[in-house]
Length: 250
Image (cartoon, rainbow, N blue to C red):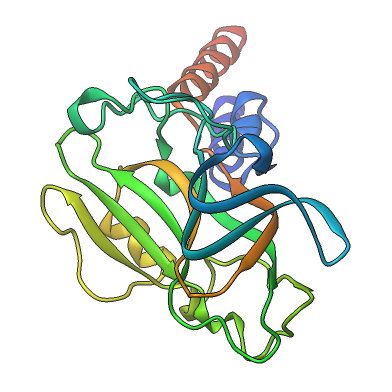
C-alpha cells in the first residue's frame, strides 16, 4: 500500500509540476532579455541609440532592418556567434547537421515580448513589421521562417512613445505563417501559436528576431523570450531511481 501511494504521488508531481527535484527545475519558466548590443543585425540597424528617453536601444529603419539572437547562444559553423536567449539545446541535427548547438525545441517557447517606439505619430505600423523564428525539422533537411505579423499593434497604440503589449505569441493576433527555406512547405495560411506547435511538433528554432520593412523607423528594447523546457530523460531517470530506492526500503 505504501508503494502504491508513493507511485501515485510521484505521478501527480510529474504531471502537475510537483516538488521532485530535477523534474521541478526542468519545468521552471525562464525569461531572458536579449543583449541587443551584440545581437545579429542586417540592413539599416543602429545599436546603442537613445530614443524617447531610453538609451541602449536598437533602431530598425528602412528599407529593411533586422535584428536577432540565437535560441541558445550557440553558433552555426561558418558564422559569427551572436547573443542568445539561453534556452536549452534540443540536440537536433538540423539542416545539413549544422544547427546542433544553436537550436532549441520550438515547443519549449511560451512567450516573446519587447517594447517598441514608432517614429511616426500619424501612421500605424502597417505590414512589414514582424517577429520571426527560423525553424528546422529534427532529422530532415527542411527549414523555414515563422513570421508573426505585428501590424495590429497600431492604431490602438500611440506613436512617438514607448509601447508594449505583452506576449506577442498569444491570441489570434499573434498568428503566423510559414515560409519554406529548404524542403517542403509545412502548412499554409495563418495558424495560432498552439496550432503551430502541433504542426511543427519536434522541430527546433535557431534564431528569434524582428524584421522591419514597413517603410518607417521602429525602435525596440527589452526583447525577451520565455521558455519552459519539458522534463528530459535525466529527470525521468532520476525519478525512476528514487522509486526503486523507495521500493527496496519498503
